[in-house]
Image (cartoon, rainbow, N blue to C red; front, side):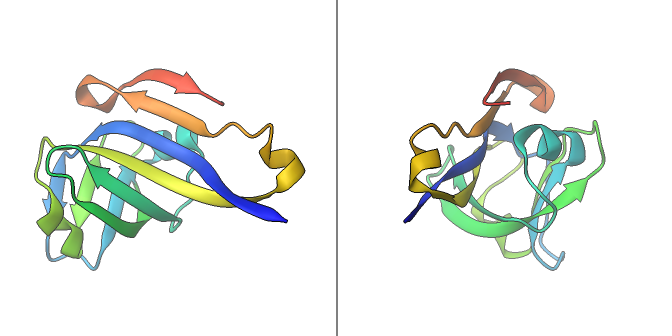
Length: 120
């Protein structure tokens, strides 16, 4: 049997821009993606800490070191610059491995700099 568990989480990512006319997705600076273990085009679930909105989309890599977190397309309606997001991805894991599983988690502070890391 497999269970569906949290794979990766970026907590308190601050939205830096939005682009309503872009085709969709959430842009995340490549170094933050790599630190959290997210892949380009991976499905994600986001929670906006400012307004309670939750939405699914996929990841687009942004410029490494930029700190960019950009709401694109329809997601641009679900937040604004300065809002804090929790960005999560999930995976299926065999039950015996799941008992010892630890997700990769990063917590961001000012200018989307990593302040804490777990499971890395």
